[in-house]
Length: 400
Image 1 (tube, rainbow, N blue to C red):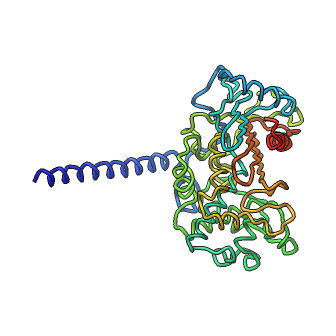
Image 2 (tube, rainbow, N blue to C red):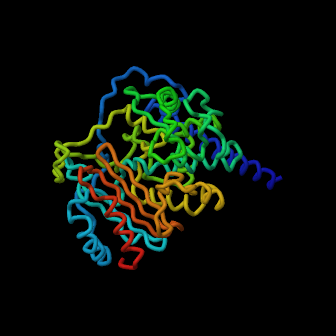
Image 3 (tube, helix red, strand yellow):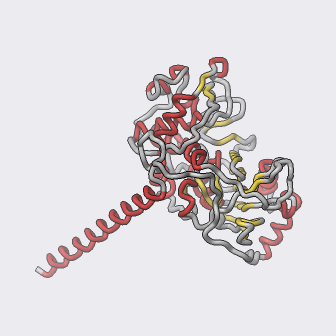
């Protein structure tokens, strides 16, 4: 009798925990909805009537004194200075060797007005480097049997010009001939952004099967994802990437108010000025934040970005075979596949730029060695991509 009573009590206790967890999850979901009414919406309508003006990110938390470096980190910093131009670099540099971070250091200001420095915790809009994550979400649906890489775009969007002449694979590798020049000036839901792109995209027949970097391919892939899963891109990203990897410094720029360490982006006016004077914060329009669906509206710190990139290459999201298939460049001239560029030595690289920020990554094929540079100061003559490549080359040659 006592055993039965204890079983009933234990069952009731577990049930309460499960109900509470579900309630908390739903509460969190509703909080995100209220933060941005169209964030999870499947509607194609414009955002509800409330004035939306261009805004900049302001970190909720700041560090006004850089943490002390270990002797090893000090030595590494000295080795990096000639490559990054001393104090010219603004942002965070993460270096990973054999799966372990050996350097994770902030440079310059996260917010000059608050005199807050960039640190290892600082978060940045990762821009085009988000595409590798979008490609991975799509490959999950291929693995689940809801989609095939040989499927034609016409199966999902028959009215798009040339849709019968391009496959999901060619969209992933950007060899479709699709272009778009006009973007919505009003904030749209995820479905609305895709719908707008579907109605304004152009097809250049002579560019079909030729590589050209055109983000609209990934915008439309987000639409394909939403159609085969009946869930929004944001829900999929949150569940299959952020929650799966337990990321604590990641989110979407439309919900910047929820971020603690999101650095303020800066640029110079005139743009030809190459100094780091912090006179002009960059104000990104809410419409642009939504328009970057699947292509560049995620923020992360360097550590979270590395965790995701390593997980992609180490087949945490899909099988080893499907990971290899996803990153098969199929002979395109730039070696671009699944959101990553192939490096000659067997690794991969990625790069993003815009809205006062810039990002770069070099990573080995097994995900064990990497250099990640995230910057909140966009300047005309930036050498970030070249610097990232050089630091990675030095890392692989055993200099660090």
